[in-house]
Image (tube, rainbow, N blue to C red):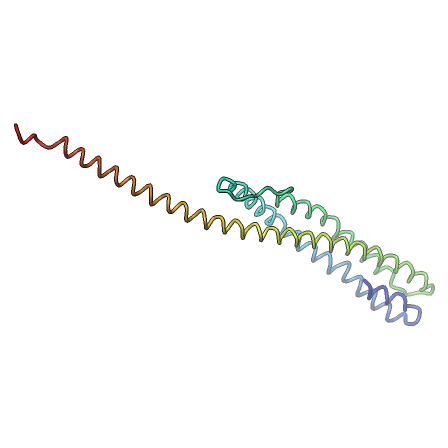
Length: 194
């Protein structure tokens, strides 16, 4: 955005350079950025679904002592991010069209350059907002990774405990079975005195 802004400020000295710079900005803002946002949003349904499963699993692990009670469920955080990203693609496309329409071909280029500068500032604000949302998404992803690592460690500890319980239960079962077998033999054998 700063590069485009600098190009618009020098527009009076070189209209050809400004036309090329503005056309590139229109392409990036009107096509490249919306495609990136759309691609990110295409992954959101699967991410939201996976997050819901993970959230449910982590809540279920509370029975094994795994602490998990976020202020906002992981899936809900991704849903909100998706909702915030929804209008951004169209806004960027519209701003890209506005910038493309401002490519100067007639006199009065200075006035058009000033208008372009205002549009670039608006787009800069929109890109800053998108960067904040993406940063928030990255923070949530880092929290998600930490929760997964903690859960994996807890499950490993729980797995050893469950194995020990199965071995103890098996040993007790075998002892009871052997005791019943001996009792059955004692009850079923004939009396040697008779």
